[in-house]
Length: 348
Image (cartoon, rainbow, N blue to C red; front, top):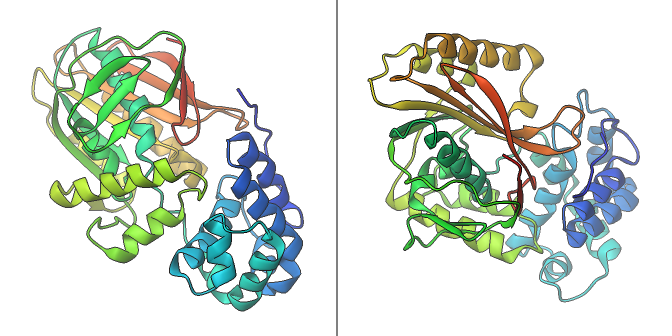
């Protein structure tokens, strides 16, 4: 498993440093894009200034991924034939195609990078489902899902997907969305997925029926991972048939209100999030933890609370799947995972 160093210094070299991470995560194409982008930055002064003056941790803000997605969006639009041909694998002259696009689209790229990344990685649903099944071993109950940072809400539909988890089949076998990460370690314990309700929150919920939304999400998929893009398109199509419930709002207040609502006996309330906490301020993260801990203190055996977290570890050295189930509240490290769910190393 690749170990990722902490990359948190903005300025010259930021794209090149994140190129190393992209290569470790299995994308030589994105790595080459970022390396060429670093070399061609003088041709895009607004983008260069934005990177150099970024006020916060650029790694947590996924600044390089914003840059790559902006170029991918331009390539998908076909407005620069050499860039489109590069992303389609028709040639390998990264510097010429990317440099020309950066010079012509400096304002577009910088404007795109100002916006928080909007990803909705369906591959991460496999880890969440494995955590739900592991929790069911303690007490089998139907789940009420609450997701933080839902984006388009695709992972609220996780009960409608098919999974292969280390040879263990789960979910809806006939689903057009097939999630089969490379699995290491023992398979998780099997339990039927019984989802009673699923509700999420996002500052800017996305509509799966909107063409621009679909294009933005697809731009964040790495161009050398076509199976991942096809899976996302299938999940978006399914979301148009079964629209997820995603509220517009701040996760801190929303979660406090949801956890204060009465919980019926015989149901397990689940708070989950994936690659979300890094975008919050420290005080916001603290408030979310306090809300969950407070609800956990009120939980009972017949009204349990489950917290499932798929996030970077301290120091950003690995992505960890963790869970806590109250009333006992014992923390569990279930697995380490690829950031986009490509592989899962099951440890529980």
